[in-house]
Length: 310
Image (tube, rainbow, N blue to C red; front, top):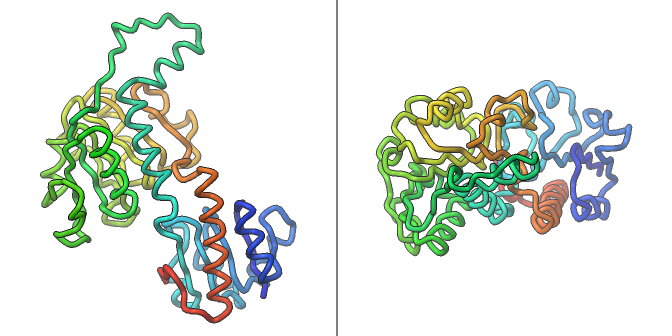
């Protein structure tokens, strides 16, 4: 049994895979032969498209670290009989923490202060006032693992009013979290001080937060995205921020990653950006790498797949 590890993985996952199979790591020259030799693949961000499946005659299973699977052509996987699994829920805590950290960094102007101090500029505190988050209205789009954790954090730490929108979960979801379930995104947007996004990138969600949605928000509102680039229309967001149509944004994900100064958003004083790092804690990387390897080894051993998406 041969497992190819296409992207850098924490050693816990590499070691587990090596105990059960011959492995080829991302940093070995033989990784280029994965199409011809792989029985199983561990992957993070490397795209696996229809042409890859067509070449990979031995391939039986792919396990994707993390929940997002937009880099894998699931239709092609099904057509070639390849099992695809992901690892949902494991990185929910650090992603929720990052969403909260980005919100506070923007609302209290942490990054702005830091940049001024490091550049030797004169910091005029009276002209750089921030906004408190106590008892603000927080709109959460996506009521899954991460959305649930961020709802608890906002309720517990800030006594926030929680509005929730997710058309794919039952009406009685979150029975133990005080919240108001919104019938539509349009109903939510005019009421929120913070809009925090925790949903996958799909054809339905692509561009969901665009010019029309941003125009419905309050001038003091913040947009926070730790889910996937593409859900927010970046050109529309840039326009809204420049025009002070909304107050700021905290972004961990971008349409083109990693983000660079080529993105006009990163030049704005009221944007705090991180490089798709929300799930990158030591604790999570140890756990999620091991689970990725465990799930793949199980499938290759003939056990029922966990968290199957194709």
